[in-house]
Amino acid sequence: MGTQKQTLYEVLGVKPNAKHNDIGLAYNRLMRAAKREDAVPDLKYETRLREAFEVLSDLDRREQYDRQLAGERLKPTFGAKGAVFAAVVVVALAGGIYYFTVMKPAAEAAKPLGKSPQEIAAAATPAVGRLHSIDMNGQTKEAGLAFAIESGVMVASCHTIAPQATLKVNMNPRLVLARVTTTDEALGLCKLEVEGAGSWPLTVSSAEPRGGDIVYAATVNAVGEVVLKEGRVKHVEAGQRGRIIESTVPPSIGGAPLLDVYGRVVAVSTQSDGRDRHVAIPSGWTDAPRPAAAPMPTPVATSEAAPAGKAPSDAPRPPPAMPNAPGSMTPERVEKLQKAFRPGPQIPADQDP
Image 1 (cartoon, one colour):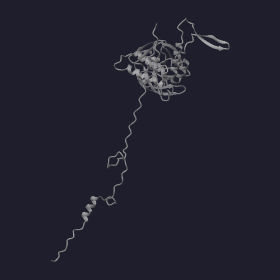
Image 2 (cartoon, one colour; image 1 turned 90 degrees about the vertical axis):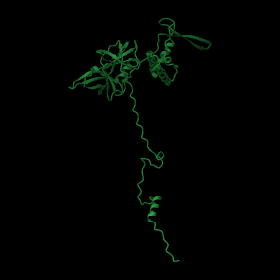
Image 3 (cartoon, helix red, strand yellow; image 1 turned 90 degrees about the horizontal axis):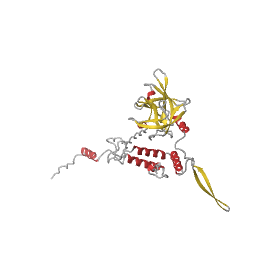
Image 4 (tube, helix red, strand yellow; image 1 turned 180 degrees about the vertical axis):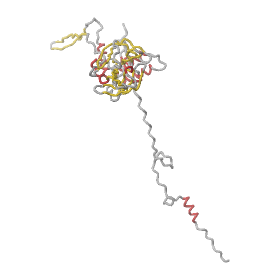
């Protein structure tokens, strides 16, 4: 008998009724242990951990996965194609108890994971637009596609962009200016800054696709809607700069995203090493920037914190007292004045004997 494949719950070491927070805690604990310096690198295990976390941390995908598990548990272990499930229903009627057998076709499979192509295309349409390149002479030409990966940030293929050209993205019906901020010449990808675009960006998958996975190559029709072409992954090649995905759907227009069954970006159609390929987006392009540290507030001196005998530097100071003003005479000054203006000693007059 073959070994039964682990469920995603078993991969993370949690129970099927685990709380949402427990999923993240288990993933972080296992991933830290896998990345320790003394741990043996295991890319397949780390990929399996990421897959389990991505599915179980998403409430909709977790619900679909639970339905799939329930369907697999109900599958019969006997008979050939077309076998049936038998359920005995007990009905109590007057005069006795009657047993009925209800037959259910075994071909009724669990709902597959992922979204329908229609759902994926509808969700991708607001994020994908046609890229236009305007040269120094004012001539405009098509430069492939660009798609948003976060608000105001899009990805395109560099080999279709002319140097020093003005770029615009047609987000139908709007035409938005774009600017190249990052270039990866080895992969042939450009990162664009596009103000006012990407309100509904596409999610970039962190999991590595596997052979046989269903993928969708996206293009845009004349009215700006995303159209999908289904295919399957042949194999994944680990290049020096990133992953290269070979699929049954050949790369088409530059900058077109390759999506998985959840609508996440797994690769981009571009020209790398002189060949049309599907390449993965560099991981650094999707890392969220860390917020700048807030400046430390300048401590304000208070009368309680001021040293004895000294007023705080920012506290209001009284005006200097005039020399002869009341209260300005110190005991030392009074003594000096008394000595200066004291009358001479009284010398008694000589008396006759």
